[in-house]
Image 1 (tube, rainbow, N blue to C red):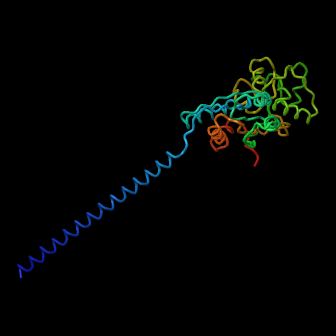
Image 2: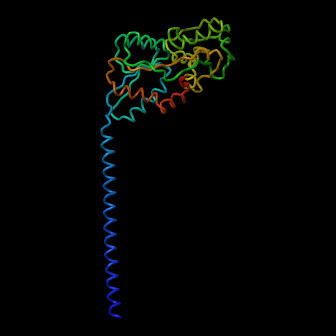
Image 3: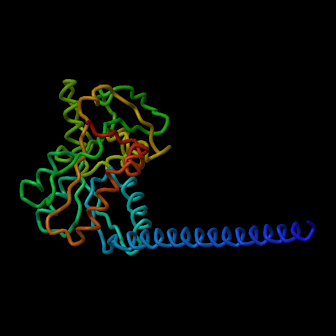
Length: 281
C-alpha cells in the first residue's frame, strides 16, 4: 500500500509540473502577442504621423493694424507648431494694404478690418478663397490717462478746444467713427485724420491729442498709456473682420494652415482675450 501510494504521489507531482510548464508557456506566448500588437500599433501610429505633410516656407500676411498684437502672437505660435516655417506681417490701414495687393505685392493672406476693404481685393479677383469673418471689433474713445478733460460721451468730443484725432474715412475705423457720428447727428472736425488706427492712438499716447476714436482692442493693448471711454453709439458701428487666402499665394499650404489657426479655438481665444468680439453665427 505504501509503495502504491508513493507511486501515485509521484505521478500527481509530475502532472502538476507539466501543467505548470504549460501554463507558463501560454503566458509567455500571450505576452509576446501583446508586445507584437503594441509594436504593430506603434508602427501604425508612426506611419500615420509620418504621412502628414510637413509645412515649410514663409507665410506673408497683410493684416489690419488693429490685429498687430494678436496676430504677432499667433504667428509665433504657428512657427513653434511648425518648425521650418516663418510668418511675416505687414500691418497698416486695410485700404492701403488692399491697394498694395491689387497692385501686385506678393502676399499669402489678407485680413481686413471691414468687408468693404476686403471687397477691393475680391472684386479684382485677387482672392483664392471666399472671405470668412473671423472676429468683430467695436469702437471706443481713447483719452489721456486719468481722462483730464472729463470725456464721457461721443458728444463731449465736440467740445471747443478739445484736440481729437480720427482715422481717415477711407480706413475701416474712420468709416465706423463717421457712421457713429452721423447716427448721433454730430459734427466733429479733428485736428488730424490718420491712415490707420495705431497712428490715431499714438497721437494720444504722445499727448499730441486729447482723445481719439479707435477700437476697444487698441485701448486694451495700450494699457495705462490711455484711458478708454465707451459710448453706446459704437454698438451700431461694429466692424466685421474677414480673412482670405490670396491668389497665387507663394506658400499656399502653410497659408491655409495659418488661416485655420486664426479660426481655431486656440486662435479665437487669443483674439477674444485681446478684446475682439466673436463673429455672429
